Image (cartoon, rainbow, N blue to C red):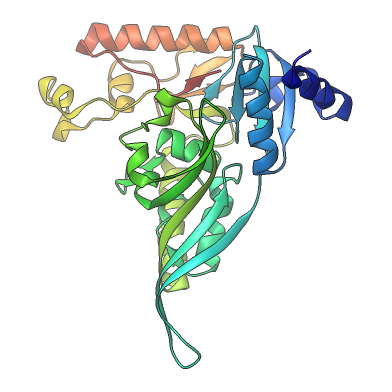
Amino acid sequence: MSKSSVLFENLEKSGRLKKDVPLSLHTTFKVGGNAQYFYEALTREDLAYVINIAQELSLKFFVLGGGSNVLFSDKGFDGIVIKNKTDKIKIVGFKGNISHLQKNVTTVFVESDSGVYLNRLVRFCLDEGLGGLENFLGQPGSIGGAVYMNSHNMNKKDFFGDHVYQAEITDSHGQRLIKDNIYFKFGYDNSKIQKTHDVVLAVTLKLKKGDKNILWQRANEALYHRQKSQPSGAHSAGCIFRNITESEARRISTPQFTKSAGFLLERAGLKGKSVGGAQISQVHANFIINTGGATASDVLELIALAKNKVYERFKVALIEEIVYG
């Protein structure tokens, strides 16, 4: 028996490795079958350790953060779903004039474990008077997911990747490495690790000192806009489709060349369309909500319907933003 097999057996004996866990309990969509194995990683060392075991055993794995922006099949996940529950946040550095006589800090570096919820990190920074993340107040998901997808506030044209200084990752060979911002090649809904399958363990953000009251005001304005324009009180995964490209918007002459996928979905008459318990939101057409009892198959059928209708009307092929588990 290999060393990794022995370590996996030790995980089972520890009582922390569960079997046949319903993934609907761990996603914001509240759909999906069971995970063959399910493990909660509490520290970044723990997270890297379990990933390494899975890699050495060629066991399929999926690192799950806040559970938003993901859709698991009704058949579940054949492998191990690793719930990232790492939760440390700390200030790790400053730039500016600091002495016993003078303190003129302008830049502050904050390190966050990848399992920390984005909303919690934003609130921590606001309370410390640190500017940069205020436009993300109220946004769901974890820091690891925010790096993976390069989370954004399109109303403010603000991308999470713009604030990343560096991150600690574990790569496909099990090596733990520190990579700077350039490594991730951040783009719209995109980062390099979507292809390399590196897993983020922790992130260091480069933030600016600011007036706490002004920062909270900006954050609350961003939160208000999000609440006003997106469905609330219903289970969803967030936006389903990526926005279209500028060239596509110009080709089909959308108003003011908007790139909004939600605009195309609405114009295609898809608001309120339902399949089983899944429905395209009446508030924002780029959201699919679980009205109760939805299955992953319902969601997939509705996604296919939406893509077909938009293509028929505009000859634009929508691309999913959500990740399939």
